[in-house]
Image (cartoon, rainbow, N blue to C red; front, side, top):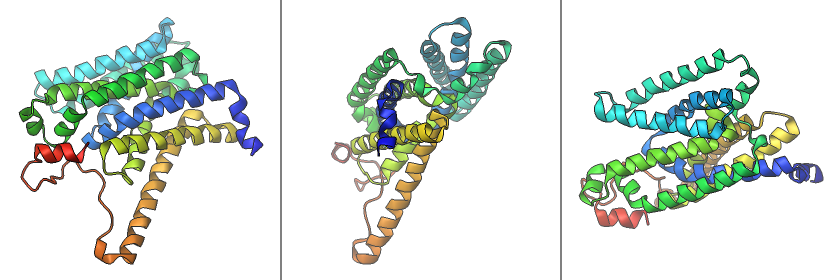
Length: 309
């Protein structure tokens, strides 16, 4: 046990754990909507869309997180502009910008002779290098994420079920979508230092997938997802310390493994319950925003409010 607790006495490990838990909170809240709305490709695209900004900031000696935020914001704005002004579908717009931003980032990296030593941290993160000011920035990001999610919760829920209902209720689904894309951008930028541009979607998706095996309500999914994310950060850092592996990839693969274990455990429990109580038909299904529970062609506003309180 003392050997297991040894890393916690080291200052940089404690900072990494603190920063990682804050990232888990952000990803737990935003990742729930990413999974429910099927926006995983958007998260992946924004993660790679940060590459030019991060590369340029590193070359110029500017703050890396500032470059990441500006580049990711530009990526999000360009996706929305292409979708509104052009004749391209949403996924096609994302795919084109994904390739363009990734290529631009690689060009900047390849043009700089002094960039080679930073490439690994750029792609896979460097959570052990988190500083106190980074933790403060993550704490602000947590407040912004939780605040916006609470304010737009009804709009997000209604838009996820049926944008027509959201429009009828005056919940402005287009604005809700813009805010959700902004939250995804915040989550991706916040997770960048922990797991890098290549693995950032792992913290967005895996903890929520693990949580949805046990939850049916969106707020509960967010809380449980945060717990799974924090556990992935803790276990990943411990594995990295004792086995001498890269911290970011260790966290990402731990999150995926937790999702697999959670899904397997839920499946085994469901089969066992059905064998013992065949008349009860098992347990409730996970959240399905495409399912209409109000008994009508569209989910009634009252049922929508009751289901997601």
